[in-house]
Image (cartoon, rainbow, N blue to C red; front, side, top):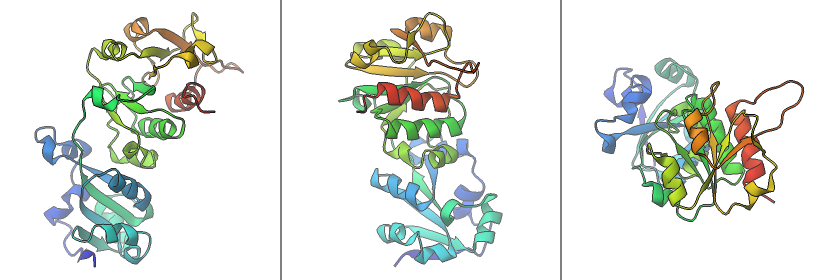
Length: 269
C-alpha cells in the first residue's frame, strides 16, 4: 500500500518543496547532491521514473490516489504521498496541478560531454534560450524528430524547471542532455561534429542543402529569443543555415524553428 499522509498543516516543512522553495533553491548549487526538481502529471512522472530518477515524495489529489496516480504509487511503495482535495492543493501550491499529481525528485548527476555524445550523430545546441516554455518545446521536438542529444550553454533556462518539464511532456528524461563548456565549438569539432548555425543572414545555405544531410555528425545551433545567435558563434560554425520564409515573415519562434530544423536535418525517412 502507498504511504498516504493527509495534509493537516500547510506549514509542514515536508511540503516546502511544493509550496515555498523557488526553482533556484531546488537546484541547490551549494549542495548539488541534494538538488531536486518537481515533475508534474502521471505521464511525466512515469517517464522520469523510467529514466532512473529517484522520487522523494508525492503531492496527490485525493481522488487520484485510486485513479491516474495509482500505477505510479504502486511503483513507489515506501515514498511519502501527501494528499488533500484539489482546492486545498491549489491553495497550497498556488497553481492547479496537472492531472492532480506532483513528485519531488532527486536531480540526477551531470554527465561529461564525451559520455553524452557517445554514439550520437545529430545533436541540438541551445545558446542562451532563456524561456523555459521554449526549452521544453525544443526537447519535445528533439525527441520526436531524431535528435540524439540536446546541449545547452549556461545562459539557458534549466530543462528541469517545472514548466520546461511539463511543456516537454517528460521528454527531458528521454533525450540525453547536458551543459556546455565555454569552448564547446572546439570540443564538438574534436569529436567529429560539424556545426550548423541557424541564423537570419543573407549569405547562408538553405536548410534543404544536401551537404547538411550528408554530414556524418551535425550539430544544429539555435540562439536566444529575439537576438538569435551571437556573431562570434556564427563565425565559428561550419555552416550558416536559414529557413526560407514567405509572406513577409522574417523569422520563427526558436521552438518552431527547432522543429523545422530537426525534421529536415534529423534524417527521418
